[in-house]
Image 1 (cartoon, rainbow, N blue to C red):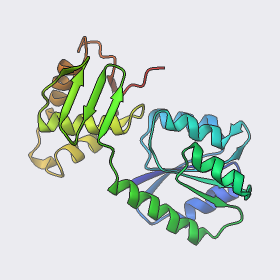
Image 2 (image 1 turned 90 degrees about the vertical axis):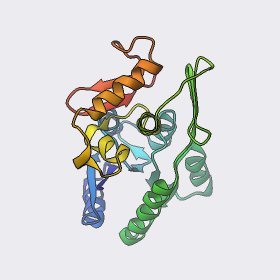
Image 3 (image 1 turned 90 degrees about the horizontal axis):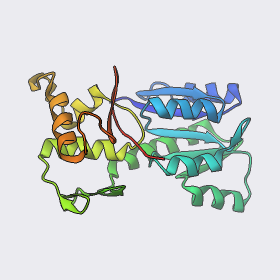
Length: 227
């Protein structure tokens, strides 16, 4: 499955150079030159990795890392001219996964991108606590207001994907492929809609006006993050 990479770099030549270097590795790209553009992408799309310049025209990349980490665990590689040890530590403590200083070898960047995507594939959180809910996928314990909720295996798979991508829109095609593990030809086209409804019935106060499991019309679903 193609993995989407968000490049946030105001130097257009470098931005394009990064895309060209990674092109052909079954990656898709969103190219932004400001934090505003990057925020818009993250509101509408699910990405697998973020390549983020620290110094941008409309803000500081390290502060943006902290903002992202309040909602997502997407791997982040910082790109910057700041090579002081304190800058590196600050970036990593903010939540970045890796840090590369300019000028850098694009081949080295390619290797680091591959490492982060490989680690993301092998890592999946199993315990979520948010608002009125606590979900432990390893122990298969699902609590709403402290009360246990029984979920089917299909509902658990759907819920886990939504929890891992809180605040991001997850496409219907991706959900179907991940939940039914490639058996799409045997899955009724309404199976996902039915599974979403059943999960809402169990978790939402009003399944007809959901607070958490939101439909993004024409695209997919998202677990809404409350301010």
